[in-house]
Image 1: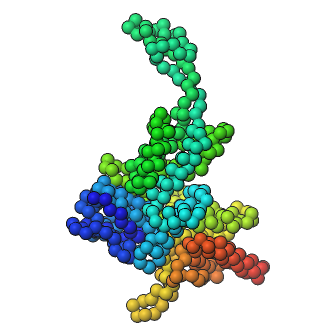
Image 2: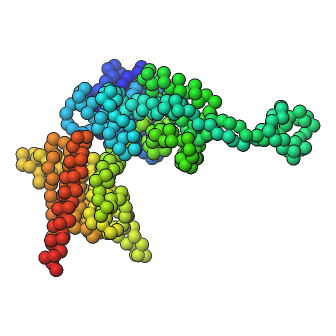
Image 3: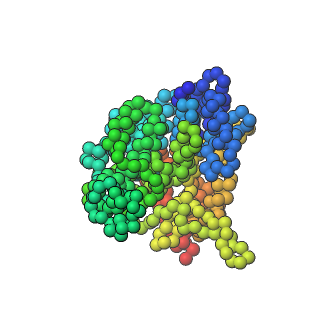
Length: 451
């Protein structure tokens, strides 16, 4: 039985012997016995490197903070969407969540598309993987229309007829029973090159994934053009060959296809999991996706004076008895000036609620920030020798204003909202830079006073 369900990250999955479906809030879904058993087996496997699902209790599974698609062998398809608000996951909530996720993936993975109102409507109405497949097929169609690139390759074969150059040494060593065969070497003009092998392999992959009839029709059409091209036996080697061939003329029309191809063939996405059944999962960790998204957006606005790095430089928290640094610290983002850290930023994918209250009704002065995060930022500030540390959370209706905390007279923490709305992102970046500039200016004044 085929069913399309949707769920927010950290949502719950239960087994239902009768009704299969999603609740209006997007927090719980009920699935069939076959689908439940497949997910339960994966959740109970502690050896799995990337665990995106676990048991909440004996009858409930919990999806962790991953987004994307999970499909099981009985046709159940679960679309997992980012939690960007507390509103119901109705038709409008689905559209908004899909658009936010699509924008983040476009930015992080350099998916360069010209967006139109028609394309936006398609994103709102289709699951993530169907939209990615559609975009990939569109790029492959462009390649086919411009011409599939072929090249000459040296081939060594045993043929029944003489072709090209006869390999005299090998021919003389032929046993008498094979004297009618020829060891030959010749140049063959063929489309069997790394780029085409990868594209053909991806077409086979997406044909298994897609449930959209429109996509399936295009896949069948495109596979006919790559019929004589074998599938790739080593994605890693063929991607290296693709990078090498970028310098050659006549390959420019292939390049736009590369980012989507790497996603489909799980070179950049380790959560594309394969098993013996017909199910699949195509998932992204939201913490990492948000961190990379913020870094990409901020980099666009950076001046030459400052440099933004991700998880660099790394510093040890302590040294052992031998003087060797241990417990390496890897902050999400570090701003450097003349190669010296001046500010450490950490991104947190969490809906921070500045209106959160205690049971007594009093406002929580911690504003919902985890105590462990405060310890982490304090350690960053002291070990990196900076005066300012920054926490960045996604903006939503209950967190729109900057928050400030003071560790001591030498270290301050600023908590900033980052808008996920496309028309507000430039303002969000500018707001962050204004705050950082203000912090730098305060530091300069403080240093002058101390002098």
